[in-house]
Amino acid sequence: MLKELGDRAINSSNNLTDAMSKNVQSSLESLWNNWVGNHPIIGFFVSHPLISIIVIITLILTIWGVIQMIPSLLVQLWVSVFKSPFILGKSLLKNNQQDTFKEEFYQLILKKLDAIESKQNQLEQQLSQSKTQQPN
Image 1: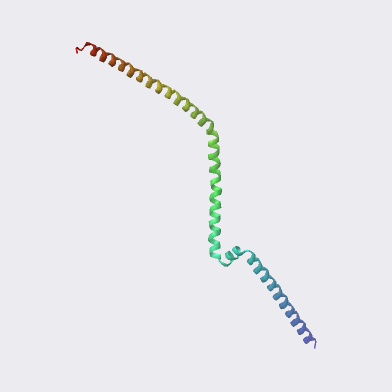
Image 2: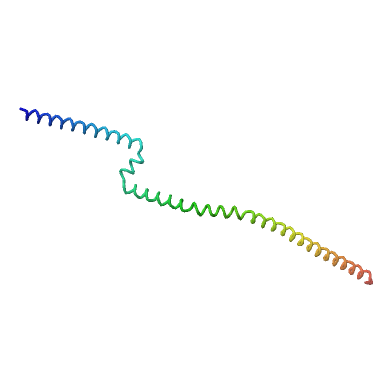
């Protein structure tokens, strides 16, 4: 009789344990299903592990590349900051030189125009002299 009572107690505890584990399992499943329903993208990646691995590797490589680019971008930034006064000075000197070159060019053109005008005046005088010297 004592053995029967012990067996019943063990069976009832096993039934209780099974019922509890089923309740816990169903609550966890319902929690998981609700969470996956609220987060479909993550649910997709959980359901498709190969695609998840490819996406994760791609993200890691992209982030690694960006992290490696940061130092070179900082170096380029500082080099351009340190070069900027020299570039500004060079451009100002270049503009001044261009202005002097333009002035010299304009002076040369004016001299040539004056030479052409004087030559034209000489030709007009020679023409008028030749007309006055020709008998009609």
